[in-house]
Length: 113
Image 1 (cartoon, rainbow, N blue to C red):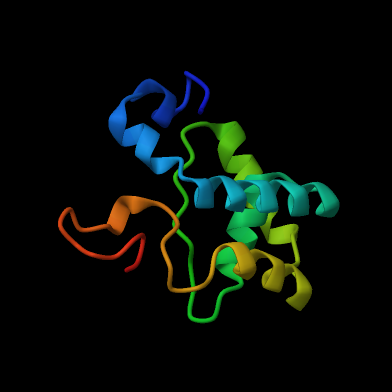
Image 2 (cartoon, rainbow, N blue to C red):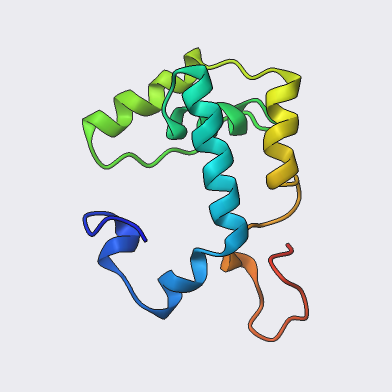
C-alpha cells in the first residue's frame, strides 16, 4: 500500500485497492530492480523509459515539490539499452494498461485500451 502522504495514500478505499493489481506490483518490482542496477531512482527510470519510446516527444511530469522536479530531471541522464527495454516490456507490454484506469465498467476486457 502507498504511504499515507501520497495521493493514493490519502485516498484509500476501494478504488485505490483496485489500482494495486498483481500485474502493477510486478511492474513496480521490475522498475525498482532495474533502477537499482542503473543507480537511479524508479521515477527517473520510468521517465527515461517513457521518453525513449518511439513517438514520444515530451513526457508530462507532475512534480508537487522541488525535490520531485529535481529527481525527474535526473531522468535525462538515464540511458536504457535494448535489453533494459525488453525487460520492462516483458512485464508491461506496449499497448496494454496495467491498471484499470481505462477499463470500461461493463467492458469484457481486463486492463486493455
